[in-house]
Picture 1 (cartoon, helix red, strand yellow):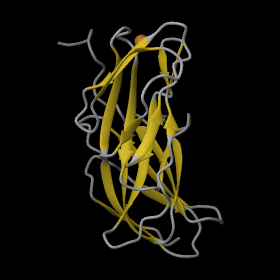
Picture 2: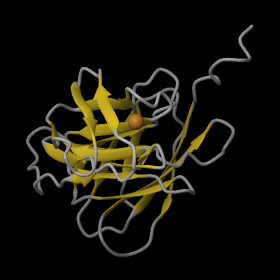
Picture 3: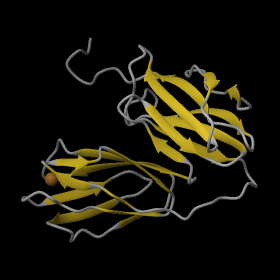
Picture 4: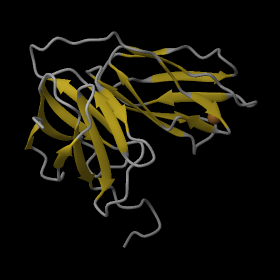
Length: 209
Ligand SMILES: [Cu+2]
């Protein structure tokens, strides 16, 4: 394996094992400090300056169903469009106060919400003015090379050979800032595997001293 990792984030532990043959990239496994997998963690590879950026931004959809946003976490490249179909019988009034993208879509049904363009990297937290428990997260990243962890905490990031910074984030991580480390992916090499552990925020409410 020729994926070289230099630890930059004190909070993250990292190890590498050999990956399978095939396309190049990195399979990233994310867990909390107790070792429990972290579904919905987001991993992305930001190319070093000067490397060409590929792939135009793809769009995404976040529906409202059963008084929830689905999916809970969405990752898109900067400049992507997201649509917000309301598949509930009730109307929703969705908004974001996040600096990376503020908007306010007043009460609507069906597909009448204005699509939003996410043109700044960062975290956008979505809520509904009518249903306080509704929440969703959009992680906007400056790269086409990203993945969201599945139920086992595994996300596979496809990327061509080059030098990158691997960033890993979870909406509930302590401090909120992505873990970072330099990685190099060489041409003709198989997938590598990175394992990270992220510290989560303490549980909210109830157990305060
Ligand atoms: Cu609502």
